Image (cartoon, rainbow over all chains, first blue to last red; front, side, top):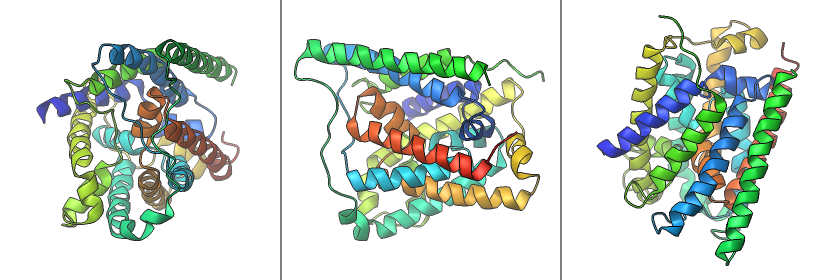
Length: 172
Length: 166
């Protein structure tokens, strides 16, 4: 319990210090005025994808891939995008922003809790409407060598995109 | 207190990536970072729905994310106080530049946005943390699809909702 809270504490500091929790950065991305949020996301994925693969070679980590439930991903993704653009926070940054004193983040959290509560109530009825479930698939290959090549290429593309966005941002 | 300089995006991305790999370690949490399951979990605890089918499914991840986000809230509180970012504020300045100073308008859209955000995250089974950062780390097809759908929906909404922002 303490261990999880310490991990969260570090997460909160990194997010808070990089300012990606703020409406200025998330709302700014929705307005195409600030690309800090996508840059941080791209670099984080690129870094962790390579490190995770190395960690797994030592047997120190397992994959935890979420199932590809097509209907839920698409409908959920559309609603999530609308919510994130108008609210200007996402679930994790909402809580980080409360820590910074942002009162609109408290409103967003209260209505997020209400949405969560309603989801529990409607879950038995909508469970079957979310499919089809295409399984827990990822882009790894059966061969470790090819998987390494895929991950390195993937990370290189994401790093490139981050620096590309940084260049575009400096021209705004 | 004088405002501290923000952490550079490149360092922030690298540190978040390293943290996620540490969390994933079998001796640490043996799961990736995630946030949105906390919302139905805490909502369900408050509404006393412990026995509901969905609450049973999310009990373990919900509990983990609740402690993780309590830590995140405290971390953000400590660092925002230390670096002079802490401020009780309802209407963000970037919002007021485009949408005006109206408190009611900001409350209304924060409420609608917060509701859609969590409803969407639960339908999709994850959010920016659990799907985009953590699923992206694992080259997960579901998460990469979610990331692309969210990016399109987010940017179209941004264009329609904020227009040509100054």
